[in-house]
Structures are given as C-alpha cells and as structure tokens.
Length: 194
Image 1 (tube, helix red, strand yellow):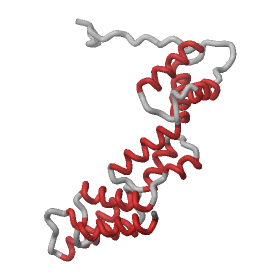
Image 2 (cartoon, rainbow, N blue to C red; image 1 turned 180 degrees about the vertical axis):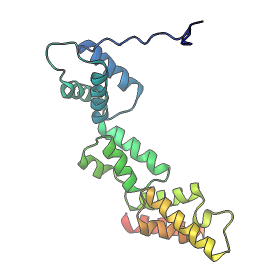
Image 3 (cartoon, one colour; image 1 turned 135 degrees about the vertical axis):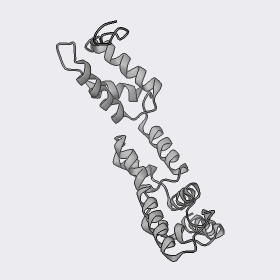
Image 4 (cartoon, rainbow, N blue to C red; image 1 turned 45 degrees about the vertical axis):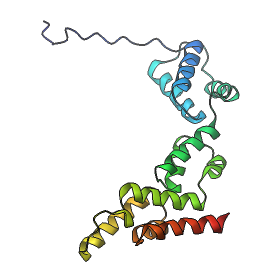
C-alpha cells in the first residue's frame, strides 16, 4: 500500500481541448439528454470551453452552432418554456417564480410574457400550493391559540410569497375558512376572465 493511500485511485487525466467536431458532439449529447433552452445550451458550451480549452485557429462561433440547433428543432425555447411553466404551476408556484425560472433559462421577455399564467391559473396554483403545504382550510390540525395562529399565519404568508404568489392571493388562501370558499374564488376567476 502506498503511503499517500491512493492505491486504487487513478490519476485524473486532462480532457482534450475541444475542436469543432467535439464541440458539436458535446452539444448534441446535451440536447439529447436534457430539455433545454437556447440560452442554457450556449451557457453550457461556454462553460465546457472554459474547462477544456479550444483547439483551433479561430474562436468557436457558439451563437451559430446554437442557431443551427434551433433551426433543426433540437432546441425550442417556446416548448421548453411552456413545459417549465406548466410544471411549476402544477406544483403550485406563482407567476413571479415562474418568470424567474424562465428568465434563468434565458427565455426572451416577450415569450415569457406569453407563457405567464392567466388569473385562473394563478388562483388555481395558489390553492394547489396551499393544499400541498396544508395551509388555510387544508390544515388538518388548526390551532386555537391566538398567538400561535398569528405566528403560523405569518409564516404561511411568507412561504406563499416566496413561492411567487402575490400577497393578496396568499392572504386570501391562508385566511379562507373552507375549501369550498377557495373553489368559489377560483371559479370566479374562470367566469370573470373567460
């Protein structure tokens, strides 16, 4: 056994610098494995170039490579953004949190505006979040102590606001007395905004 204790460990080999072929293969492998946006793909390729270096005379044209992938429909910001937004809505996240996630994925502002939830979806997501976290009328063990109620309410309001819901919706959900009251609130949005 060696003194440094590295008998079975292999020495890390330095990866070869990227060239045009390797860069395209890397990009293709990434989009085959992950649903992604054009901006995330470009950021990934830039990171790989920093890590591994470039083996070529001229600098790689990452925007052109990403554009080719967009033209071939390997990457579609609208499809990715819609899936991301719907997934977050289903988990009960609010419009602000969805916009942050789409912005982090480098989705264009006009597309983010189109993908944002309408009022009915916002209310439905707030109720879904409350159901999942057992807030408001979904609390199986409501407290009777006024101090505990106030502290619990403040924590729940803060959690809903952090989840991307506006304060009015958060207050409406946490203060609701019954599940039927929340269902009526969602139904009002359907009637009002359709």
